[in-house]
Amino acid sequence: MQQLINQTGGVLPVAATGVPPMFSLLAFMLVGVVLASLVLLKLRQSLLVAYFLCGLAIANSGLLERVAGPEAREAIASMSDVGVMLLLFVLGMEFSLGELRHLRRFAFVGGSVQVGVTMLGAGLAARLLFGLDWPLVAVVSVACALSSTAISVKLYHDLGISASSGARLALGIAIFQDIFIIVFLVLMPALFVTAENGGSVAPLLAVTLGKGVAFVVMAVALARYVIPRLLKAVADTRSQELFTLTVAGLCVGVAFLAAIMDLSLVLGAFVAGLAVSECIYKHRILSDIAPIKDLFLTIFFVSVGLGIDLREAMASWQIILTLTAAIILGKTLLVGLIARSMGLSWRAAAFAAIGLGSAGEFSLVLLTKTSDLTAWPSVVSDSLMAAMALSMAMVPVLMRFAQPLGNWLHRHSGKLGWHPPATLPPAQRVRGLTGHAIICGYGPIGRSLASSLANEGIPSLVIDLNAEAIHELHGNGLAALFADARQPEVWDLCSIPQARLVAFTFPATPEIAGAIQFVRERNPSITILARTKFSAEDEKLRAAGVDLVILDEAESGRAVVREALSVFNHTRQT
Image 1 (cartoon, rainbow, N blue to C red):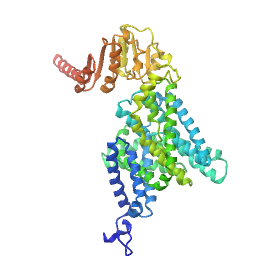
Image 2 (image 1 turned 180 degrees about the vertical axis):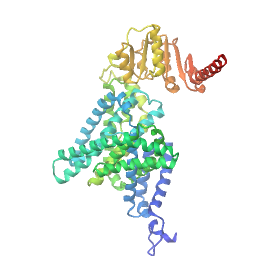
Image 3 (image 1 turned 90 degrees about the vertical axis):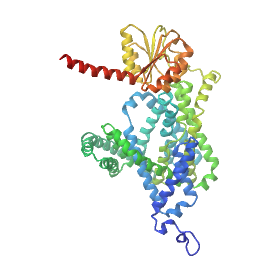
Image 4 (image 1 turned 45 degrees about the horizontal axis):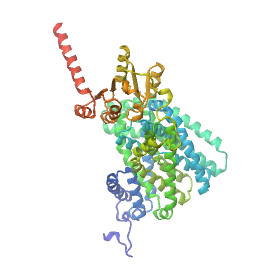
């Protein structure tokens, strides 16, 4: 300890003792993150909030300069850039054109309205209240329009509603937000260059966009002719270390190509992810890169907290709370209205609205990147950072009220003066069915069942969340609903008192159990059939009210035995 005390009695930085500054800082950061995460997990908060609070504590306790010296912030910023780049790489890999096709109405209609209206409101507020220049107004408006996909998707999964119409609307809007922010990050440097030089923005934007298109074309060529062969050659070596190194090299290498073309590193990382998203090694790549991504993203969110002066933030606490409330209330109300206008129930609208009611990870990324391009008024940047982080922290808390709020709105919608259809859109209503089967899920088994019933002249009604499948059924003149079977009002559309059978063709016990109570309330004597993968779920389904349980394990076992015996019987006969 005497090494830490100088001759005047002051405390020297730990770096002066010979311990590498970054090692000291990482030690404090990671230990602090673990402790903060354990506390917040008990409170059912997002880990991202723990990372942010850890950085806030380190920066405002004097530990940052004491432990790592004045160069610590620059080093942390460089490491956080790696985290953002890896995040975009993974996002590119997980980006699904198939999912986008299924959710295209939610994504392009709901997403464009949500992003456009939020940007307009936030942009006007930033201009009028803070007097920001137009490039900064654009940044603030885009940052406010984004939501936290990581938090909302995890919450929907934990609540068992990831397949609900509300969750799928939220996912569709989130996909549109991801596309939008990638394009904006590419064009953003041009906004500030022209603003500083006083030139016209249109030519520079056109040149930047042209470079982006050329880069994507080059990446497509790499994805088709180079990357698959490279990954196959590396996979053939059976070396785990070499494969992980190759994946990291692809991410950094393609991002470097983008930087050479004066494009954003994040565009390069995203396109690199897209380039390998369709290869057979996708899932192995995701498993290899996930721990590295999580580590560097942790550093990024800690760095966001490091950049906030708590004294200035406390002096502006009224502004921070006002901004937080404006973000949450404004976006929640907007998404709720969008959900209702697209035919979702009040309950589904409440879940979608609260899930998208905060700022997002890319909001913080965007504000941080802007600081590298221009000077922010400190009161604005610190207040925005704190408000957006606080809004993200509020989502898990507010999500607990989504179900009661949806139920209350459903009961009092008439008193609110809004009388949209309490059911799904009129084109999807089902009338005149009797003696029919209701098939929940139109996957391979649902298709087979519907086809077999049709061959026997038995009418059926399909409920599914695959828009293309529903359009296909409508085109063939068959009854179908684009709906979530766990929403009670859906069963009011199904002529369920006249139905003879309800068949759940997907093996998801929690979702099935939640829907069975609505079926029994409307027709206590109807026969319910359900699938499950595991024998342990059999009793749960029967206790919930299922009459016939199809056990995948048993059916597969019988099929295996039958085919194996047929081989030996054929051998004996020959």
